[in-house]
Length: 231
Length: 278
Image (tube, rainbow over all chains, first blue to last red; front, side):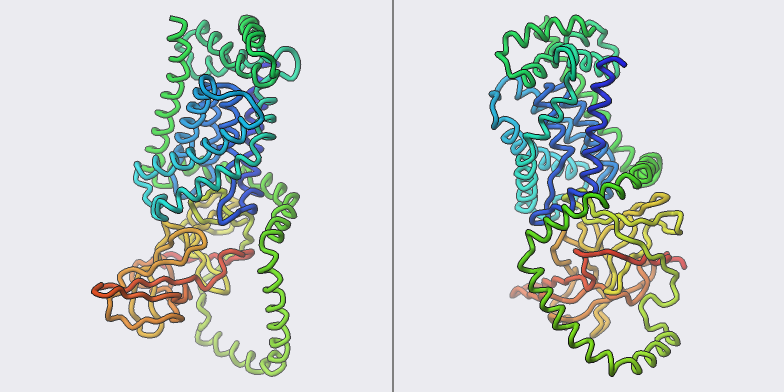
């Protein structure tokens, strides 16, 4: 089985596991009536590990899974909110954020809070008025609690997502790049394989940077070569 | 050119995803819970049902431990209250057995029990909602047991909610306190009819359109009104009045009510196989 397929399977499996936990155990762990959001957290972590493209795609898939188990909001609303969050975190990660032990919790705090608020605002825009009926104070309180709870468990979840999205053997670069081209061919076939491969190597560079924790220059170089192989 | 491509591709994918999501939202909103998207949701619930049951039975102690740790004080207080009540009840039970027999015969004759002769399905609560914005539970019965959307759900305490979604093995019950929930209620003291609205998890319900002249006070009971085409049968206990406020010069009173059924700890519920036409 090709590494790209393996990585995709691992990520998919991880999302399904997150969904099962989110619909069973997590609601039992409510503080002030609010529980963590594992699927949103997986999106944030995937964006941190793999950049905007992976963030957006994982966000869409995670949101869709979450939507399957919601009742009063339409299918696709979480998918919309989460893919925007994934893309935004991925973009910011590339340009602004610094590597460090605080990266995952801090990003999870801010991005999860923003994600919940985006979900509510997007819902309000399409006429889901029940989301805003509790009032702005309660919405912000809920969003902040989700952010804090996600931040607490962010570090281990990010490690697991990083493992799922990268290689278990060989260089992390080739795996991430292969994953990128696989997603590329699945979703953006019209772009052509050349661009897909290029974007793949781009994803792999962040994956490599995250998992190897080496200086960024060699990681980039390795990732670049990996991109060539992956294609 | 390379730099342009680097930034354009993820953006293109985001655009694609957002458009797909909006399409889904539109399709689902138009289908109004049914149609293809409704079927997909139902299928997903059935597929995940066994996995969820297994996970929950394995990991339930974690939730119980968490609840115990965070609510230790209230659990202890409740325990001593229950001991006290148990002692009282033991004493009363001796004297009550004869009265109970009489009451049973009477209620059987007159259908005084609020469920009356509506057929019911008893179901176990398997999960609570994963969302922070809706208040619902999942029960372990579905269309296979004769459950359909919009059926009322009760416990011994009174109305709990209504079935909002149903698949072959599972059903999702929207609770009274969900912000989308509203039910027509009647004040037992004088028969005035109002609409009660849910306002979110753990919050009291709001009573709408209570004009300033209505006689209503804390502790008054409310039951389902059962007016024409109302979604619930008549006379199911719903809530007790918690607070009544009248601001000077206002035409309406501000009334909050709390459900008589304990919604925070539901284990078994009864689904009434009832629809407005029957």
